[in-house]
Image (cartoon, rainbow, N blue to C red; front, top):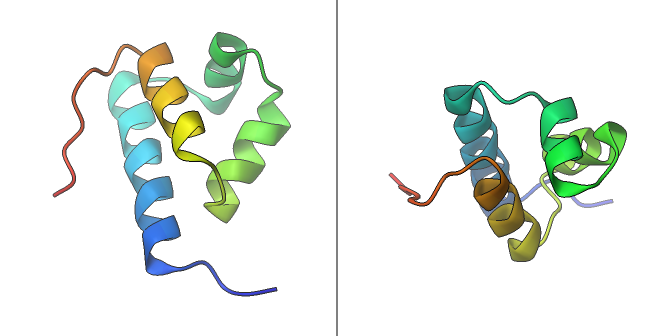
Length: 69
């Protein structure tokens, strides 16, 4: 299985940082988006998730702006 790409790491780290800033746990995010905590945890640890998951997650925690730097 290939290693995470730089982009996958960046996307995962970006979402993790936003969750931390908002004080949202993986369990809370899972509840907000109607998923299981283990699925959220796996997506973020692997960095393998769709843009739709990223947008859904950010919307669920009330994050309307995203800085890439």
